[in-house]
Length: 471
Image (cartoon, rainbow, N blue to C red; front, side, top):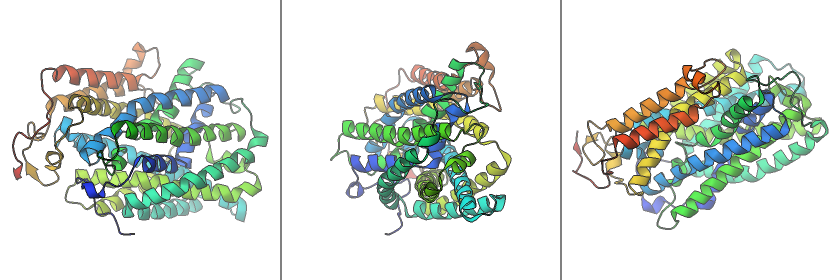
């Protein structure tokens, strides 16, 4: 299979041969991994039992899908990734806001997947072969997973799609076996010695709904376009693509996360997930668990790393996608080593998803408002001005930046950061919300309302005002 040569350039119509079924496959297969499963552990680690954990995850996931899935329609129309597509709202240089947001999201989730997958693999190998689970063994596992991940990400979309189709079947079988493996120890009660993280039920439940449920779909706000740009709107209508996106996210997130909740309760995993998960596994399930940790981590991290390469390619137009992917892999692996030996998993995960949700939400809201206003009509050639080192075009605005959109995102992100509650930091606006983290809602409202007000009398850019010229 040849290495994909496409970066963030426009995909020609003859290459847009994927369909809604491929979209479902890649969203399902790539998410059946420990990097997503571990989010199901968060509610029990916060002190919630079975049904509060399930309702928090399901509620948050459904709300996130309703907000995130329509973003898939943007790249269906532009034939390029979402960060570049956002140039229609932010300007061809202002689209760097989306590239940076996407890079941070992909970087964090790639590192998390390699981290958890490597820890479980090291724990399983220790039980099978006898040596203690040492830092050196974990380091070897991180390196091996990262190397395999780079291969998949460099070869690109077609290989990742084939991997996802295989994983969507194989991982379901492995997780089904896991249900049987942990059935004897399952309990509906929260793990021992885990009081409500925020002191009472409802604030803790809301935190779980955001950190474990909502964060799943929000992680895809810049990723969905990586797949839908290969779907042709001439052969597949928007409604079908939107439905496929929603179904893919629903199954791809709920199946692994609810498995994570189930195994966390069975393994009594409170302060840590990987160690108790391996310790509670019966001997016959250790090899399947090892396979699930390796294959699932490579599939998910490969997809995230592929997106990172595209975002870095968008930030540095002179870099090739392959070179950008390798650079991103080195940074992600460095984060894995640092996080594994320096950070607490629960605190790091919670802080990461809440902070990036607060920053990414206003960008997604503004992009969706712009998509609705232009009715899905874009000048695909004008979106590529920055990549060609040119100037001009309908999305040039002022110096390549659309000030109202950029200002609205900055205000929304600032409001979100001021209203967030993490184990490391609490914003001053929490005093106005009774200590409940409403950063997702407040950041989206602030950014969206300000953008709407600033552009109320402005017609959406839909046709070139001038031809781009060489810089």
